[in-house]
Length: 153
Image 1 (cartoon, one colour):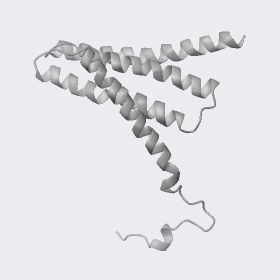
Image 2 (cartoon, one colour; image 1 turned 180 degrees about the vertical axis):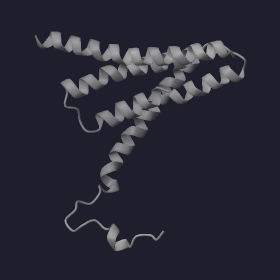
Image 3 (cartoon, rainbow, N blue to C red; image 1 turned 135 degrees about the horizontal axis):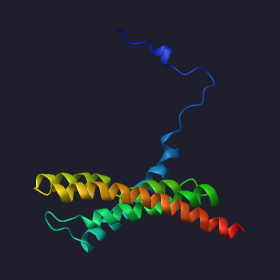
Image 4 (cartoon, rainbow, N blue to C red; image 1 turned 60 degrees about the horizontal axis):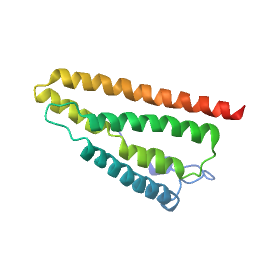
């Protein structure tokens, strides 16, 4: 197989160029700052609700459930109500809530429980987190829409 000629890879004349790095720098900055805020809040939650070996990881569970509920409210507000500044969604949605919620820790917690001889706790945690997180985002979005609808009438 032969590589294509570089001439055939060039965009046709008049095609808009991709955004320069300098236009993306503010987005990267607010995501990084928001991520630091969210991760700090998650760490505080883990200190507040420490997990015992083999125990149910309540801090991670509640972090993910609360984070999903806030995502439900936030997405309704910025899509249905408020024409947010272009940096609000990357800062709060991707940064703060992305740094706060932690589905990677959720996966590690499940593996630790399974490897540590606590399969029932691990499976209960696996199912409970998924069900609670999905329910939280759905209920929060539905409740937010209902509250906003009442205010409009």
